[in-house]
Length: 225
Image 1 (tube, rainbow, N blue to C red):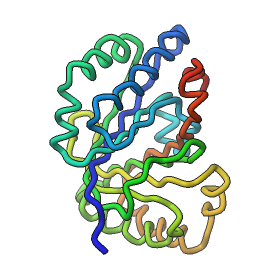
Image 2 (image 1 turned 60 degrees about the vertical axis):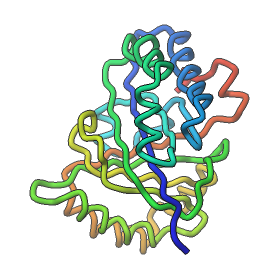
Image 3 (image 1 turned 135 degrees about the horizontal axis):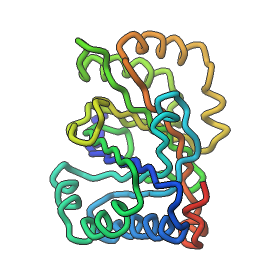
C-alpha cells in the first residue's frame, strides 16, 4: 500500500533565560493559533520535555513547534503568511537567543495528529564529511524497521538548509506515551541498527517532546519546562 506524502516542519527555539514567563506563554499560544490558517494538517507547540543527546544539551533548545503539511507549496504559503510573520517578529525573535529549523518530505503509513500525552522524539543528524544525507536516510530504513508498527515514523533529507546548522536529516518517531519509548530503549535489534548508523554521523540532536493536553495548551502553562 503506497504511503501518504507529507512535509514535516520543525523549529527549535532557545528562549532567553531572563524572559518573562508571560512572553513565553504568548509565543506558544500564538504559534498554536497558526493552525487556524488551515494549511497544516496538524500543529503542536510547547516546551521541550528533555534533551536526549550531548548535542541537544549543548544547544539548549527550550521549546519547539512541529507541524505537518500536505505539500511544500502549503509550507511555503504558511511561511510567507502575514500571520506567521507577525508571530515570528512580535513573539519569537524578541525573546530567543537561537533558532533552528528543518523540513523534509516523507511518505507515511497514516497522517494522524499525535494525541495529547504522546511522546514525540525528534532526531536530527549531521553526516560526517564525505557522507551524504541520502546515505543516512537509507541507513535509517533499518532503524525504522526495528520499531513496532504502533510507532508513527517520518524521516527524510532536509530541504531547507539555511537554518539547519548542517543537520541534513530529520527523523520523527511518535509513541503513545513516555513508557512506550522506554520499552524500546536498549532493545537488541534497535541498538544493532543504531550501531550501523553511528559511523555515518558527526553529530546527533535528540529531543523528546510531550504533546500537551487541551487543558495545558490553554491554561497558561506553556512556559513550564
